[in-house]
Length: 346
Image 1: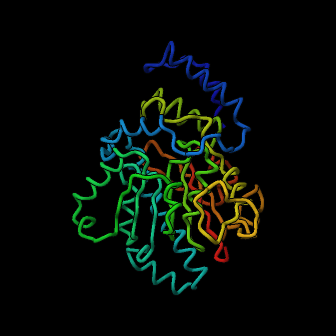
Image 2: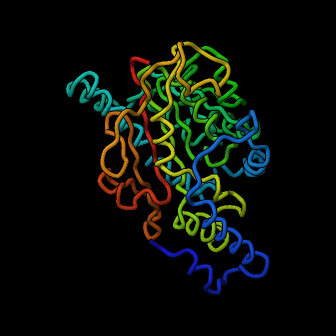
Image 3: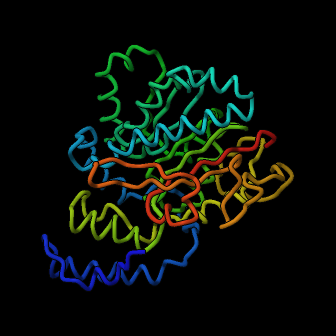
């Protein structure tokens, strides 16, 4: 593994010096202090962080500039979509057999007939892709500026603007949407959880929005020295790929923490307006958690959940989805995708 502390000791050029270098040293110290911490609930009742929302609202006009602030997300998006498609096909095979999987795979729109929610949709990069796969898609974001940009961009695409109600955007949060009765076959939240307050409540809200037998997809960053070096030191301070302050190391979430959460999380068969009521055993809560078993290296069984590393290849300018077999061997030390399925009997 790359020794991030050794890199910090090296004199860094390309615009870093003085206060910026002091900042990197402070962040490196936080790596040591927080690398063993667990995902925990904050004291706030809302998961929305006003500072984070203000940050991304200021950048909202740049969402569809493929060479700008969000260029890496533009390049990552096709890989995320392929992963979602892959998991839906796998689930179809398990539920209905190989013939059903092949029939679905032959169609371009593998999400046809499904209700899909994109939590923290930003400018709509993923939401538009999901709608093109046939899903009835709702994208939500706590930033009104982001929703405005997403809506405007979608309205300029005849395929999306003429497809009825296949794509809708709403200025709201996951915990607010939980109060409504609608639930979804697929809930996605990509590169969001590392920007929220109270990640436990956020995960609970996202999980509550999933129908029995439905799918939850997350994409985030592990809290490791390697991820600090790549996303903060290199990405923000050296290469300037994203704005300084975009990431907060202490908010990064390790795969083991997501697995642990869903090993204890139990769905309620009835709707609730309070996300913090979930995950505790009671008379109205399913006795079965979403993840019931793990095997070597603490990884879940393939039918319940999946963790896959996603790695940026700088010389090709593309992201690569790592094979499942590489997960125990460092492939999820930085960016990764997480999928978990709500039990049918919950």
